[in-house]
Length: 80
Image (cartoon, rainbow, N blue to C red; front, side, top):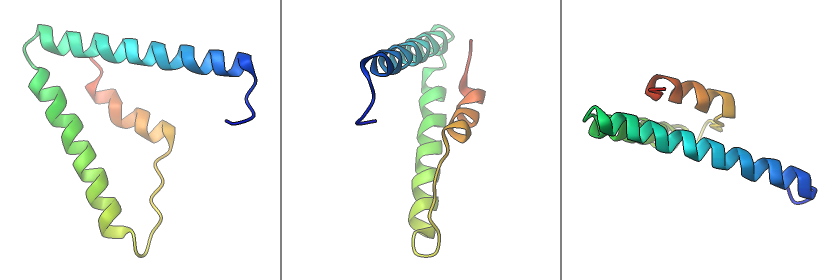
């Protein structure tokens, strides 16, 4: 990432903005059906589970979460 050219940084920032926009719209959708608490409960449970597994296995394993695995984890939470 340090040696990225200006066009790569522009594309990266555009993708981040699009993803944040989708996430904001997703939060709006959950809020409009009065289930925002459920979204954050699921996200919190995933985070606590990931941290728990990481702490439990850190002596014998190296836990690496691939970007496509992270995307698959978030698919059920998508309301679009």
